[in-house]
Image (cartoon, rainbow, N blue to C red; front, side, top):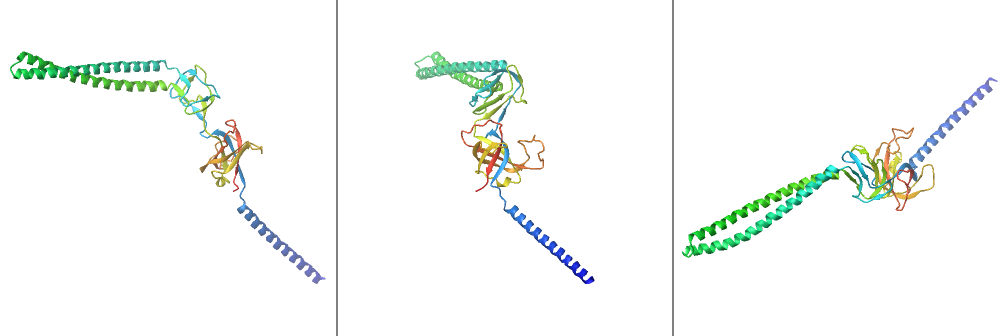
Length: 319
């Protein structure tokens, strides 16, 4: 009876040892399998959150100086050519100063023309006086002409030579004064231009946040502007998959939570470093310790989506 009890105990111990060995063997195999899967796993597409913008980004419109809005020439949605005036601030003083400088320049140009005409006339008279002086001098040396006539001819010739020097100096001084007036006009023009805000490039006016009579200042944007450039989805890819993105990869955009593509495109830019989240930094529960890679997807020509639309960017990484 005691012998059977020992046999039974040994049998139980052998079974327990066998089970433990089998469990360890299964665990090692599972770890090895999981590691192999993790090492070989490369997703065929990557999804990131983004928004629609022009490739040259949306610009804020500002003024260089403070002033009262006198004119607004365009409304939101209008397409504007580079250099066209968007708004004009009150500029009566600057405009009057500019007109004054323009008038001074014109008067000075007239004075220069009169001085040059007088100089040209005097040079002709000097040439004639020179001919008369040389003839009188020759006759005087031959005792044919009286000394008084010789002195008179000489005096006239020398006087005209001095007059030419005076007129030449007058022309130089007048030209220098003209350059000064032109510099003053450039300054007046710059002061006047600072009261006018023009389109920096061809593009579309998105918003104008002022009315006639509003006070604007340099530190406060008064509107937004979209430069004409390819429509782009600017998105952020999580650092876990950031190294899988390459310029030229096929991609498409879709509404968040949807599966149907809105537009097709290609990756046109992949940021050279990881940065903090910036596009949707106001989202609740985001992980501040995560980093993202900024990626631009240039959408196909003809795509029409509203600027600022939140979308998902799907990048095809499969080669």
